[in-house]
Image (cartoon, rainbow, N blue to C red; front, side, top):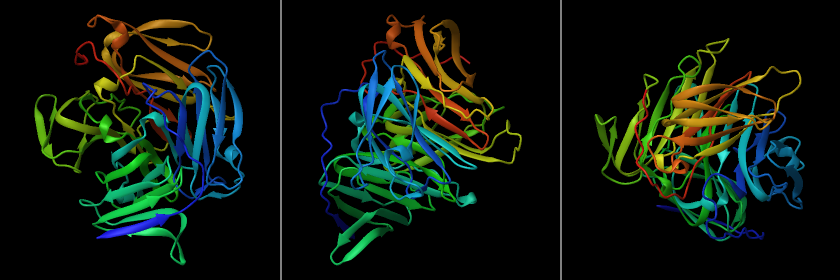
Length: 458
């Protein structure tokens, strides 16, 4: 059975050039938050950080709002700029479909953040160069807490045909911007076990998939590149958000992220299969097989890093859900999800933005989890000084200094001829008074490996 939904709008076109971004830094981005965002209850914003010493300017546009002109901002060089969502539009209450287009004059990193009374979520935004046409959805929701699994799809070009293949999953609700179908105005479509086809004629068209059941593995195919954001929410609060990469960025060799069990909830690893007969091997011992569209969650009972291989490309996510042992009120439930990059996607240098804080709040705490070979790296302070430090795989405690930058550079390697090619995977864990948030700090998309990764020593 097919559901046909046609949307006809007149708008302008977001052009695509050949892929120019090698990693998570770039000049053109799309940022999305979950629909019906109430700016009276939630503080939604983006942190934009130039990665060069050149003065950088940005233009930010919220396209679905008629008559809205771009917001032009000077960003300076290597400064963190916090841009509230309200700055891009004249919103005072509810934003039905919150989507931003960001264009900058020089490369930047972008982190999206939304904070509520009892929630705090963030994710690393990838440049438009890595928008794709084939995805596996990866939401997360805890059914025991009655949270909602959500995935948002944002189009980047006109005349985009979207196919959703719901074979292995339950009932899913699809919400869109209001559009005309015959004489009716429709903004909702239900999708039980079937395929839905949607024709969309609007750049930055917003489609939200929502369900009380986890629909991870749902297949999305499109005729033009789109961007996808998944996670979960409860009582309209975003519990977790993550931008999902297309399946062309799935891979075969991973190491799980380290974690601090005295600070963070115990995680689980979610394995997403795109192909039939995909065999996953953990630490050269345990193994199992998944078919196309299937996923499997494996709880991690110790802080030991897992070595992961598969015979076919997979997606891997680390989910943190539970009570945090570091909280004053240890019954507080935290929920977050972060993509685990493959070894081939590791980076050799990252700039991490710290959040700005109010003058009355205490200093934020920030932790950095790194997985790497035993090598040297340096943390550069805002004054420009740096101290080389030896690491292997660990979680590092850092103060989330007000609006300052943290730079991590890999500077040598004992096991690779070219130290520039021996990188690391890393995430940040930021704590606020209400909640905590995980997010990736860097991903490489185009690469040529020149040496073999060595298993981290514990």
